[in-house]
Amino acid sequence: MRRLAVVALLLAPTAASARPASKGVYAEAGLGGAATLGKAADWTQPGPALALRLGYDLFSWFSVGAAASASTHEATVPAPPSGEYVQLYRARADARLTARVQRIALYAEGGAGAAMLSSNVLEKVGVQEPGQRFALAFAGGGGLEYQLQNRHYAFGLGAEYFLAPGFDALAGVEVRLFLRYTYGGAR
Amino acid sequence: MRLAFVATSLAVVAAAACTSDPRYLPAPTAIEVGVDTGDPTMPPATTATASMTLPIVPETMADQDAREARQTALGAELAYVRLGDLDVSIEWTVKNLAATAGEFRVKLDGGNQFFYYLPANFIVDPRDPPPPSLAGGIPMTIAANGTVSGVLREDTLREASLDLEAITRGELSPFAAIFNVNEDDATVPIAPMAALAIPQDAVSQMIRFDVTLEADQHMILEYAVRVRDQRGILHDELMAAPAAEVVAFAPAEYVPPPPPAP
Image 1: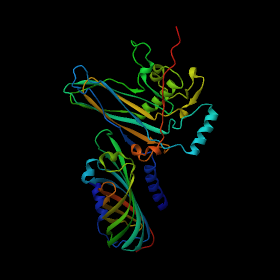
Image 2: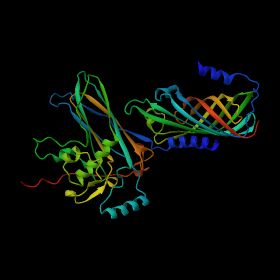
Image 3: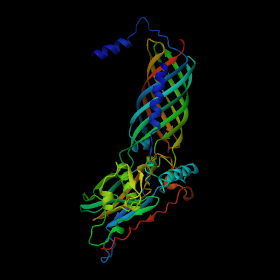
Image 4: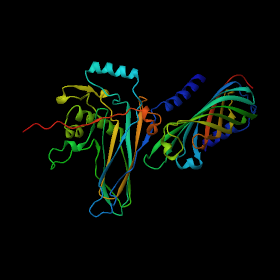
């Protein structure tokens, strides 16, 4: 109950509603989860994900950046092997559009890059070709940010859809909570 | 503050990405025993073996120079692939295809660059029990139409490499080599009477794996070899690698010297 009261206090509008947000170079670090979709969902279980993003606000509403994420999944291919885990690494260059309403900002982003699987355990089910570790990957998504009193910091919730056509059209979604730090003056 | 935030985040991702990732090599074929031959005079086979040799890329000149320098220092011939280069484990699954419960054993033998081990070669008197395999060999029961899975772990196969070197180049009895745990020994003998011993990281790594299924019913064994390549010597395409791009290891069958005359 006390926690709820603290959260409500943080979210409640105050006289300082028009919080300034920094504009410039920023970094984001997020934790969440990722799950594959379609037939790949039979071979990989949902797992935890870690995401990083470095970017630069060209305008208050548009930024470019580079994003990387890593997620780990139990591989549920026909045994043997069984009980093994595989990591999916993704990196991309992307662009983000942001619309800010006082302390809340909504954003949409998209980009292209590469995906890497840590092992060939999915080769058995045709997700990978022999010797294949990398594939082209695309990702797009959106989310919202909550600007803190300090103009450099914001919390956010984001979700994205990713697709790696080279891995037998491996697709999935990632959801994350993140912290953003922006180095720069007010927007 | 901001630098620490970014640096910590990057360090976490780098640590996650730089661990030695496993590679999985599927068995060349499933091993099936107990198949009805259709001929009453020919009983079904109760044992079958499949062999797999790891696809290793040829040794570089730099590696060869380093190996030869170490050979000179130790006064012993060293293998190209040595203990610690590869961490290997084998995962297996046995399915009982019969409508009756049964018993089976999964055994592992094999070879390094120099020799491969066949327990039958050590049988002097047919009445004696055969020497043990390098790993496995534990009798297990399985239900009718049941499935049992298991793994020969990395430490087990590391010990098997130590034992193989001691049995072959060290001319140690298989019983002595296999039933003693050598993982904490500083050195391993590679000459008769332990006249010459080498440190564990100079011991030859097993690169050939002979997996045997022994069963009293109609059963099938499937397995996969899991390798963590610490030295980067496994071919990227694994079993699909062109033959010209991997080392054609040809270990000799190890035949022990005859026992001394009574």
